[in-house]
Image (cartoon, rainbow, N blue to C red; front, side, top):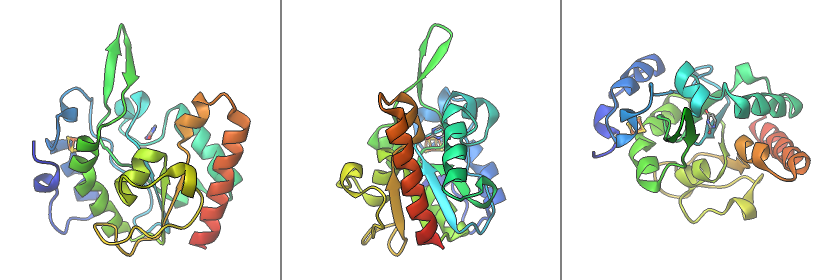
Length: 206
Ligand code: URA
Ligand code: SF4
């Protein structure tokens, strides 16, 4: 597979893109997933949040951030002064990657090839929404937008210039992924860090 580019209709609006993504064969992930999960939110949101990929619940429901990580994100967004309904939420990779273990589907991190294959969808979303700020949740999203040299540990919560390339001219902030907060041994501190970074994002988007 050659990536998503050939499946992304030119000049399509978000609704058209959302239906077209179901036909994407840009990498192998469509084979085992239930459906693609496209972004959701107002067409001209000031803030566009990017996660990694849909999880088990998102794959079944066809909507981003509706599982446990989404619940945590909703809470953090509200604490940081955002209303979820005003932001555009999407993922770097649109199909769920998992490993079957008995009846469970265990999340597998998407590889660089899958992230790169799926980028045309994210680029189309950014192009249509034209956000004032892109907020990357976790290293996968951050490296999709800012390149593989980006280090979340060093630059989280600050405004980053993506430099030349696909995301040139965008204003970007990266923070920890809500799933990482859920897995953390120091959940309270990591949750507080997420809220702090989202507060910083709120003022940068203001
Ligand atoms: N994790 C993500 O990165 N995205 C989702 O939509 C859900 C969980
Ligand atoms: Fe296409 Fe992205 Fe799904 Fe791969 S993960 S098939 S590139 S939509």
